[in-house]
Image (cartoon, rainbow, N blue to C red; front, top):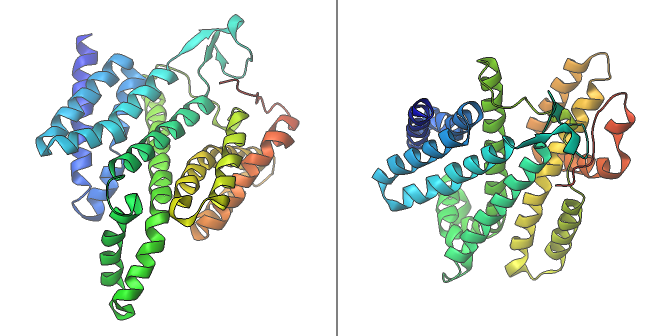
Length: 320
């Protein structure tokens, strides 16, 4: 108990300090990106108790910069990390499992697909809170973002004129919530995966590493995504961004499932490393187009089952 407490406190302080460095230039921004890493590492090595102490310590340290900073730390980093760690460490006897895809040493561990769905759910909650917090402001959330973006565009493109900056800001203010949500989801996913990898490296992991290439998602998610896309096409312009942002959040798990399919298919080819290197290079160069194609591949996998048709893919539908 004492070791978990001490380790958790140190992890929380480290996480809060990493957040504070984010405003200190490019290097600080890179370090700030790793802010959730100590929280995940504490939980995935020492358990939920250590993660809880880490969240408490990080929130308290962040509070030295004001109540708002403490709330932001808790909502963006602390509580989602604690929730995901708690779910990740759930296991049941293999004989109670519906499928053996996640069974290791007689235990069926909580599937990685369920973790991704819950992470997307937390992103949806944060978006809803942002909408509520700005409901009383003129123009709502886009109205709050637009002046900030207009100032940014006017600095970046002063020759374009003030009106051009305002026009760009009006469009970007409706796209920004989706971009921020996708960036946040990516950050939490990368840090959680890194934390598990580090835990395995030091042989302190509290659970076995999930089979990422065998990621599957509950079927209801595709229905929800289709509904969000439909609303984004039908709603008036003033509220269309809400459905579009929800669609982006719901598409993220399918992006990861698409990546799992790419890795599974590339693994059957002779030049696996070369294929994956070319794929990720294309993803960096044309992130929007390739990202949409990967999401589409993830959705097609729901019914086509490319990995299940392969030899020993080991995937199974999650009931979640």
